[in-house]
Length: 134
Ligand SMILES: [Fe+2]
Ligand SMILES: [Fe+2]
Image (cartoon, rainbow, N blue to C red; front, side):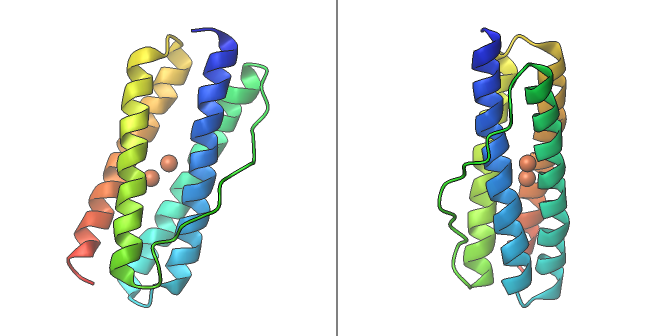
């Protein structure tokens, strides 16, 4: 896998982290239930840290972070719908990062992706736990 291909993949990840950050910030304010709202807010901050880590990898390899995200979906205004969408975003991220860890031959990138993957697994678990309380 050449450097441009790694940068391209990292930029796709970066955009997904932007989307997660923005969806979670919005949802944390719309959710009326205190506990899932606070958890969603805290996880939004994690997603922004993931943006920084990916941007660092991209720039170090000669790329530039791409900021173009797709139109956002939030899961509606019902806490259950929002949490279900958030769980789906985490599950997609987990699948992507797992696949990338197996295929990218760059030790530094793989190390960072493993760290992000662990956090996405924890996020999915946190959101799933809140689903039963709303
Ligand atoms: Fe993330
Ligand atoms: Fe996450």
